[in-house]
Length: 58
Image 1 (tube, rainbow, N blue to C red):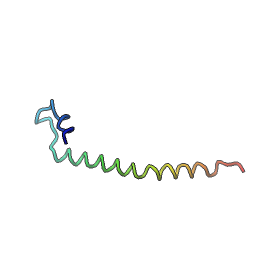
Image 2 (tube, rainbow, N blue to C red):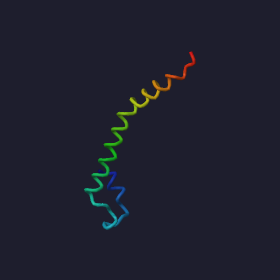
Image 3 (spheres, rainbow, N blue to C red):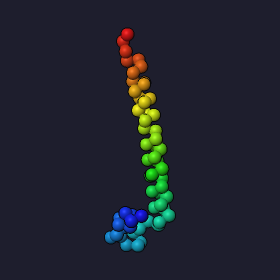
Image 4 (spheres, rainbow, N blue to C red):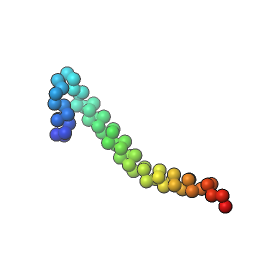
């Protein structure tokens, strides 16, 4: 994780979060983003279907 090492520059050792907590937090963020990405097409499809119903006057 070269990017993370670059972000840590400028902080003292005492100011850094323990690596385990950081890894868990990053894993949760990416895991949640993946779930939302997979659900997005379903949400859009459901919204379009529901929007089309009941709004027609005939």
